[in-house]
Length: 451
Image (tube, rainbow, N blue to C red; front, side, top):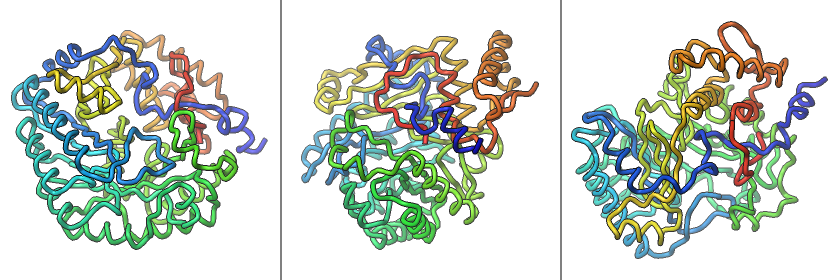
């Protein structure tokens, strides 16, 4: 049987599975976690330790139809100013509860469009953060950049704030594809933004590109990839477009009949992957590529790659705190998520409390399965020694879990005394194999096919 047929038989083209940027996944969160729990978890952080910080800026000048992020459109900075006032209040509240001497190993501003902010807004927000938890000496500070919403003044403000990495949204350079997804962005605009960032000594550049978009074919994605490669990005995220109009209503603007079939999606991914690898990039996990010198590639080679809500990371911190509407935090004890609606978020912050609306407290079983799933998603390999070192009382359970997976996926995996490895030709099944270790029932909310 041809490999594609074998992958199809195991559900590659029709199974709806999470991306596993967390475990348990967000649909399993509940209202048992609130502001008081968040406060207790923040206060339990070790003094003098390093944490990560994520700030969510949910505003865009124009709402792209393909996007399923929690965002809202605005033509004015007035609502943004009101939101930033609450965000600075939330930062101050964090500072009131954060133990002494905590610094940031990583900081990321996402959205939305963080570069929508004016230079003064950037300065004020950065100063509020620095007053509570300054960047560590070797910290990485990344910002999502819309090439249509950036100029020299805003780049200068971000550089003053300590920005080290820019993440540029590309998606696709083909005009018909761009028109169909509601995002018109010429190559020249993207090129000029990259040059502007590099001229400010922000030399680490990420780029996001999508496969599975309407009207994409192998020739079109190859052209887009080749144009992207001329910008010499350090990292590339090759995400699969998830068409979930029942969750993201704006996606109903995209005609379903224009989308490639699952089988064609696989060809699109393989075409882009081959071009990236021909240009010297190393594949990182299921959907990232990095130049050999990049810290993400080094983490993958040395076994230090991790996975969180921003995707793949080399961040060593055990705590990630999310600030802003809908932002998610991860602590050793569990997850917490802020209210998604900016109005609900604002009411909580104005009342002087954390805006947490739901979350999840880890059980011992959660932590075991989370490590196995992370290993699958990062390394395509689960090591007995690694898992048993973390969970020494579960040796028999681990072996049984991996044995069950071996029986389920047969020749797609290799089970040895050292652990379970997904064969290279079957790595497209990583999310489906990870699902095998998920003890929770899938809701289907927002999940997309495995390729």
